[in-house]
Image (cartoon, rainbow, N blue to C red; front, top):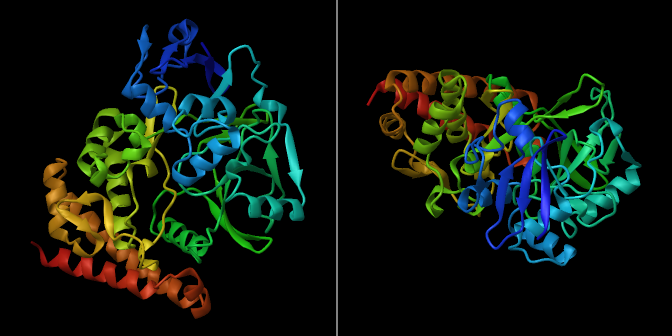
Length: 421
């Protein structure tokens, strides 16, 4: 039987076994002397063997989805349905603090910092190859995994992020990555500028978001996002921070990340925060702000894998936002909300009445929800007005960013909310 040793930030926490239904068991030393947090909410700290949905949801949630996953499986010569086989080959640097290594192999120390620095031509060549060779799976020294259906690559940036173009390296042999490089897909022109604009807007209105900056590599626009699940270690290296997305925490596989496909609802997410966050009052407020922001900015794709908890000792807090995109910029994309707001299933339907329904179902105070709805709409409208003046028409057109549309949505929501129900 093949087995993978599961590590959290370099510390052995348990064993994942390749049985007919994969199983996980915690290491006795982790249970006895660990820092006090589980690998997953679905895998509580206890003696015994875990199997079934809880194990599949967490570990499959570490892997890419859709076309990138199928291409990776083909490159590795394994079945696209075999989570264990794919993790065995690319699970060296995953989301959060998780690393997986075949039993008998030694995990390199994180401070080793083995890197392959890339010249611009080599970097451009990699970016061009990524759609056909996601995560550079199978290349010597690279065992990298990230969830999601978009092509991306974990990388390391040189110190001095203030530089316009800091050097970029590939992390080798278990070295933690520090950033995520996201090339623009050919079928969605303007996506990088769109996401950069939305992240900047979120930051300007006071939301906690991952740091990011756009960059042209070769001829491809890319977004480079600073990993919020990484921090400076005391020894000067990089420390991984454990995280778990809402799908994993609720026990749903990535294939069920959309509510209309049987995935979590906003009610489920608010209840999860209420039960699992160390500071639920603050995190419920921040999650509500994120839901309102997505509705105002025309983002129909704010699904449950786009929200996560960060673990620090026994504390579990809502992670900063990322993947903020105005999906209205592409008419061909679905307008159906990944999680309904009340009974509203599409962006066009959403009104204060639907937030009132959400407040009732999720056991939130309607006066609080209404106040935050009006306040967020005020802030989005004001920042949109300012940004609209500061960027040129060509930039807006290239990004597919109708500032006026977002501002109109915010103004309409604010006007309706102030009128009352």
